[in-house]
Amino acid sequence: MMRSLYSGVSGLKNHQVRMDVIGHNVSNVNTHGYKAERVNFMDLISQEIAGASEPKENIGGINSQQVGLGALIASIDKIMTQGSLQTTGKNTDVAVSGEGFFVIRDGNKQFYTRAGFFNIDRDGYYVHPGTGLRVQGWNSRTDDKGNSYINSSATVEDIRIPLYQKKPAKATTEVVYESNLNQAVEIVPADATAEQIRDFIEGPADKRRGHATTINVYDPEGNKRELRLEFWKTGENRWTGRVNMENATQVSVNVTGPGNVDTAVPGNDRFELGFSSDGRLVSVSDGSDTLNDGKLQLQLSYRIPGNPEPQTINLNMGESGEVKGITQYASSFTTRAKEQDGFPMGYLEAFSIDNTGTIVGTYSNGVKEPLARIALATFTNPAGLTKEGETKFAYSMNSGDPNIGEAGIAGRGKINAGLLEMSNVDLSDQFTDMIVTQRGFQANSRTITTTDQMIQEVLGLKR
Image (cartoon, rainbow, N blue to C red; front, side):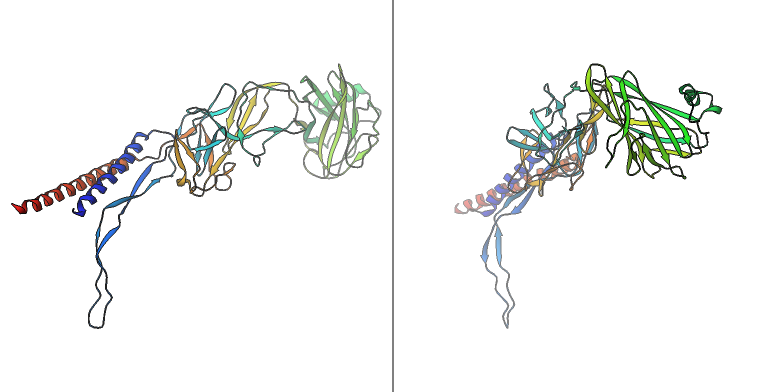
């Protein structure tokens, strides 16, 4: 039987497979995260009719004579190029810009996908909606000071976004002060009465020799209380301060710092600030102890009704010799409380996702804190992953082990929220390949029919 008959058959089979792959690509042209495939052919083993001979002294060499036996499928490659990003506006949708796959898990089975059309289920888990598989990453933890943090070096886990969960109140532990006390004002007499000091602070601007600043702080129950600090000039480069806490008792301040012993008198509500000749804060004192190095802070102590435990707040005035915190220059009073770290109880109302994959929650009390971080996995040979359907990939022996970590680190791409990655199928390429495949199939069928006609001629020789 003629070899060309079998060569034509192999060509038909191979072009059928190529058409199958093209059809699959076209059918997934609008599948998010889909990666196109292509078919590569290679020739089948050739039968040697005559071997090659080497050149001799009086005659040249002769090449071998071989007849090919058709074609084989060399590979079906996955084209892992980046697909275009489509805006959706949905905050749970995410897309990878660059290398990497989202990690999703079904029990002990771990899969990988580029399709980030995720949702939140009834229990608050971040899931792949087509399969219910849970997205992997790292949930936030709380340290001993009540601050949230994410340990992305730990083992990945199911991401959970607890919408409408309560955030307990946090008592204020630190207040940071900044800006300036006017060096040009007159000194307040040492024998000034409380009423005179109040007039110096709150009176007309041309008579003002002091300044007051207030900020709302929170107790352990989340109650808002006004903290007021008053400052007045009592000497060259020296100011006296007084602290007052709304609806609190036993209010007192004392110096805290390395090497200082708490010898402050209970109920002492006054302190002193010392400045250098160039306006920099250099010391704080409570009348018994003085701190003149490093962070210059006072500890405010107070009690609230119904709670026998004393509450404390660190009043951060700045750092010794630095131009931050409180300064003393011949400029307008601008001293203010910059920030405090307490808040009342709140509910998780919304969240957003940044480029690192960090999910940041927004609470009804105005607090924003990290809730979780989405993990990405990269592979040495991503084209070696096994397709599992439902836009999922699985590890194979030739993909390499998954390298799981944060987005934007170690070659991993960035995560974009409110976007989805479209299929990377190019229809113009697919239609062109479709035409070439059709012609290839037709040509191979002609090989078969022509060979059949030749065989028919041989059979007719006997007539």
